[in-house]
Length: 368
Image (cartoon, rainbow, N blue to C red; front, side, top):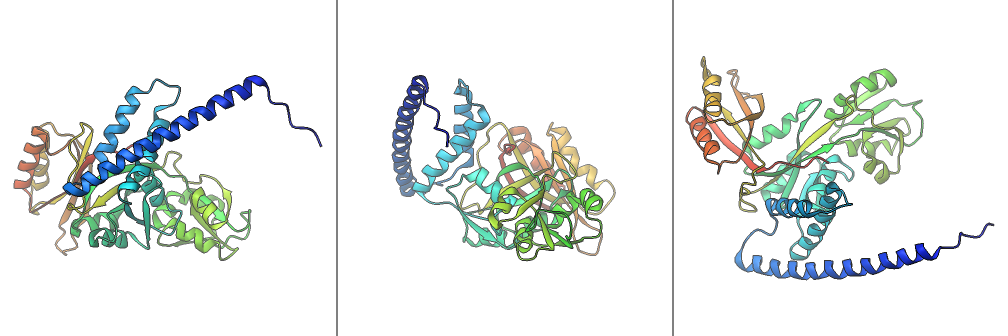
């Protein structure tokens, strides 16, 4: 057996220096945590919200602006998000409803937004995420709203129309679908299970490599991975996180048809939990509207946005299911209702709508 290499004096000196810096960091982090506890007591006394995504965004932007390097700003943001999450957990743990079971991309998006100190509540469907958030079982919820390949998540948008919750934040996640299985081989796969969106996002690869396998839709990708762990002839499409969670092999990595496949997630809550975040200068306003079914009504709906110089970043239609060929329109615009030109455009838009509901105004999300 060979002896371990002798540690040089220079390396030993640097490691001692790092140990000293770690001790200083730990002391400062605990000092910050004690101040955060005092902040929590004041918030509790004043009845103000404990979690404010606009405040988180401001703090992270400030430390990034002051960052001299060599740490990259994206890593600084991740570190500070975890620091703030841990401190917030001392004030009051945040209960966040997500699509379950453990290992979903929704869970990953929630951790990216709230940090790993959040108390996650795993739900069987997006319907349950909305219900848990509206009922107060969870303070916040995280739901998928749009994919860069397959478009909107229709069920989420239908739920928004009737739910009392609103959007207070967003996360854009780079989604890589992996083929997971008990056996580390493609041979003998009879069924591939995943959320319908994931099956569509991987249909080209599945047609080329597993043309005879049944594609079975389940409630989430992580649920597909959980089921794949029960039968060697089954496979799931899910994250590396799900592979580790259920002890599965990653047979093929990143099989989505589009290399830069992204999913956008919305963070939701009741207005009494957290009111509309204040404008940050980089905001999005989401709304759902309908207009009378008559010639020129859609033109009339869009005219106020053009008149006041408001940019529309998304425009989707969904059937009203009234049997009259009526539609609801889901719109994202750049800006915040507190900005004069945005507020004026929204006031005029409301006047021509048969139905009008602001789903939320919130800081633009960061890409992960």
